[in-house]
Structures are given as structure tokens and as C-alpha cells.
Image (spheres, rainbow, N blue to C red):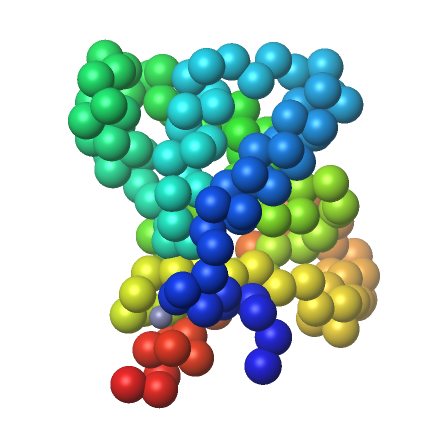
Length: 158
Ligand SMILES: [Zn+2]
Ligand SMILES: [Zn+2]
Ligand SMILES: [Zn+2]
């Protein structure tokens, strides 16, 4: 078993620290400003490994005493998605933090329907199969999202 879905007792502070560190590096490399609002939204998304919706983010911000309007949150989300620091789960209309923003990858998301956690896999065989299938019909891929729903190993065990 890999640590795609980290153990419940893992040191999540380290996940947040490393995500923030990577995000700063990526923003810098892109000459993009990691403003306060962007950082707040990013940190909130990384509060857990679950996908979070824009409205939940808005609630959380207001809970922190930040008077944010929906467009502000959407702009921050757009920025983070644009730098591929976070990904959008289309089927849930929710966002989660990417833990490998510095390398190009097709999204393959394992979504636990019980605990709501999302894990991202980079399976080269799957990517190759998608590219081959597209190539065979002359289709130019612009974005790929593969969303796989089920139960993570913790939830499946109970
Ligand atoms: Zn974690
Ligand atoms: Zn990713
Ligand atoms: Zn689960």
C-alpha cells in the first residue's frame, strides 16, 4: 500500500508546510504574486486532504473574520488553478491541493465517497493510454481529468 491516502494520524502540519513552500517556489518561478488572500485560500484548501467547495471556503474565511466576497474567492481559486497549485474536481465542483505542482501531469484523482479525501495519482500507463487513444482519432488534448470514485483503504477497512 502506498501513502497516496496518508494515515489519519500523520503529521499534517508537514503537508501544509511543504505545500506552502512548493507554492511559493512555483509562484516565484511564474513571477506571480502570492498575495495574502491567495495564501489564505491556499492554506484553507490544505487544511485537510478533502476537496472543498468555494462556498465552504467563503464560510471558512468569514469564520476567520475575513470579509471576502465570492468574486474574490473565485479569483484566488482561478489563480491557484492556473498555476496548478490546486485542482478542481469537476464532479464535486470542489478543489484540493496538488502535492506535485512543479511537474507536469495529467490528473488522475481517487475520490473517497465516504471521508471525502482526494488523492492524486500519476500513472504513466494511464496517461499513455489516454494520449494514444486521443492520437488514434487525431484529437488534441487540452486537459484531462480522470475522476475515480470509491473508498480509500481506511474507509474500505471499516
Ligand atoms: Zn496531510
Ligand atoms: Zn496535481
Ligand atoms: Zn475514505
